Image 1 (tube, rainbow, N blue to C red):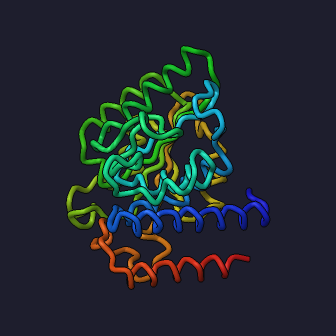
Image 2: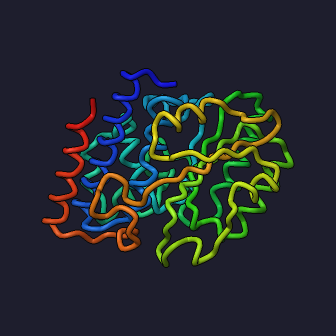
Length: 280
């Protein structure tokens, strides 16, 4: 478990990541804010407490790998990488500009810390499986961490990857499903339900746990306990809140992609400041 001091530090980092997300929204005038904010706690725990990474050596062979399969949530990844020190925060202000390094989906050729290009949903898990197999072949003990969206699961390629990763017994893989229950078309269970999600993944040979994905203690406790079962890939179904941190936007499909006014951004930034001030 995290100590009280560690938890406070992580909570402050999570607020900082969310502030970075709003900074990019202010610069670019729009973005996929809902999923970025729901996944922010997961990325914060991974990058600031769990994963073995070095911002000064982004290509270090022994590093852990992170794959943001749901590439449209890239604001969370950019905000985390900047906060961790992979690049200067001033770059965040270029979001939305022509030829920016911070595109609408992450590009490994433009930004340090991005392991692979993602955005065409359904491909990230396959890439992660290849990475994990490569690490095994190279006899490296690094792990591969993945964040997927629950709406993304409708892509059939995910299930091919799930079967292959299980078949090869890649227990150096941990996947988070950011189950915020919403996608651009509405409630995920209405658009294309895969419930009961835990039983489906177990049927594919995965070891599965369900947690509160906005609770840093639960994220840390479970993500540091992998593999959950030797010889099986690990899956955390993380129940989260869309647009977590912005009370007026939480659990609302209209904030999947947001084009705010300056006044709305002011309200959002105030909400995060209030959360930060309440951390103790």
